[in-house]
Length: 130
Image (cartoon, rainbow, N blue to C red; front, side):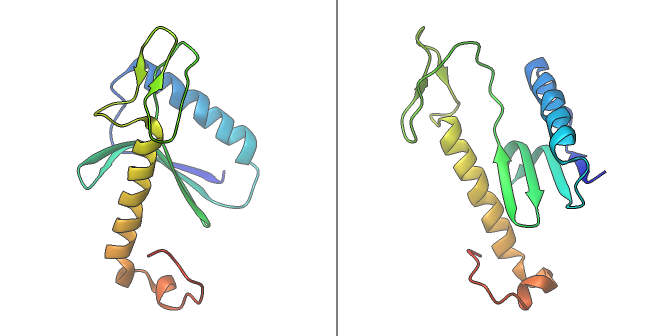
């Protein structure tokens, strides 16, 4: 199996647990027979920020934010994500896009701060963001 899972703690809500179960089933269906490794990190913290899911591949870091919403919603990069009934999707004055963006920055900061610990970064010839 080319999908390995690490869980920081068990998700607090049933919708998160159900979403993760569907997500892992989809990952197994799509990538289960590939030789490339896909690491899935679940419900963990970086720099005091809780992160729901992250997929690590050899060429990508993909943070994923889980939200419960049973209605369609209108979304924008910087504004609120709102349903027709007025429910705002997101938390702490940040929409899910902004949360994922901040989580990605946390990852880049973590890698940048620990770059000296990775031998592969010492010999990398391409221009990396960290």
